[in-house]
Image (cartoon, rainbow, N blue to C red; front, side, top):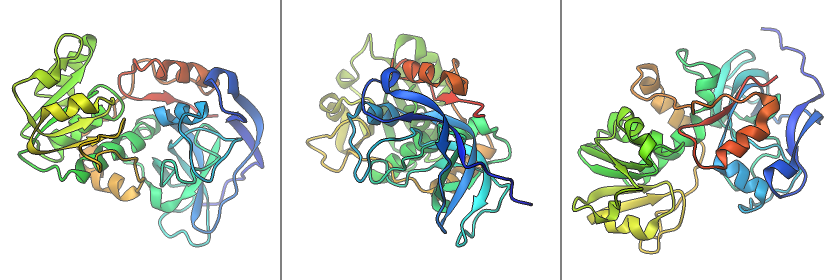
Length: 320
């Protein structure tokens, strides 16, 4: 396939200073298209999803190493390869790909993220998009699904174990439930969410949904092999673990379990490992009903994500 012509400048959402998203994030109609090195590909972005780490970095509340604005937010992408570096072996121009473009979430994250017409990243973090998924569906998956998977791997989760998921209706929690049940073979999955999301938890595969507005999970007589904390309640979470059990957290460190807290290491190997479950429908993309937001309405998408009321992923699509 002949390489499509790539412009020198593009539309992108950019922030030059830290602050409230609505104040500092601006649409730039002439931002430079990123250059690629020999190990990278340039992707024409079709869809992107937002994650809390995006606005936490915009606010300046999460400081990344070896990084400073101006910056384009966005980790998750689905799109089409339009240029490949000389050492790239895995992809060719025209391939439909998806992934989380930052190998380490807060270690040298890219200044040009996915809320732009083009983004550049290493071939090692991208996978071919499953044929049964749309670009919108594929873009909803990488950071959240990989975080869910890496957390379960870190605690050695396996068939026959029980798990409590705190924040089961959120971006990551929704995949923890699905993966624990349908990929790892959990014996029992219990998950927390608000009143309106109880049925949603059951649809994901939770054996018992818990309404945290009415019930304290830490007071349950039942204890669990693993607690996956996606909301940041370590002091309560430790009370729900069986003796000899374990905890994993993406929201806050846990004093009694110093290895519990982690940030994702993005790797296409996880996407490739989970591809059969995506293709057979055992693991489903979870997109918030208010999504997608138009590219021009990206500020509205962030405002909604920042309410912490989303069910599943907040998406931006189509990207011009």
